[in-house]
Image 1 (cartoon, rainbow, N blue to C red):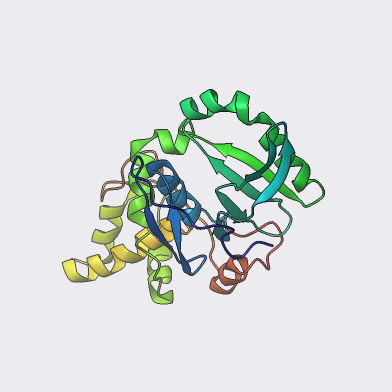
Image 2: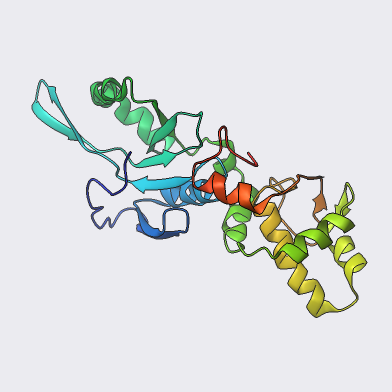
Length: 235
């Protein structure tokens, strides 16, 4: 529905601003705060989010002060069978302080979204993923791994055992450190894609235990990313 930003993000000397490279959206996405940046990592990592659009739309609404404009932060495209999401990212204390004066704006935006199969949410620093420094570290780390050879999937599946550590699996595979490092990149990728289950609330290390293994089909995964799979895949 939304494909390009509705407005450009200005430079901000109070908050951290910058660009986030999104492979899902094949573009650089601007952020206006550290909190927005951290959420962008979560969106990029989540199989539930297929595409991210910054500043997706601007609406005009009437208030006692005349005609005003509102532009939310992000639009998230989700799999078939789910409502898409528009997100306003705010620090909790800031939202609490400004909400009394902004309620009309948000109500008008919710009216605009009626019958569009799009939900509107506030995402704050009280989100459990954002509150966990370990979880945030893991999202920033895993984002770098997106290459997964078929041969490595077969190897990892054959060696997998519940609660085996990453290092133990690597040792089972080979004594050669070079071969271990090559396979390790695929393990990180399989964790990123949610093929391998781990506890992401603990910092990922070679001692991380592998808790579960989902079956994997590359063609289904690609179809999921293109929004062709009802209710999604590997959610």
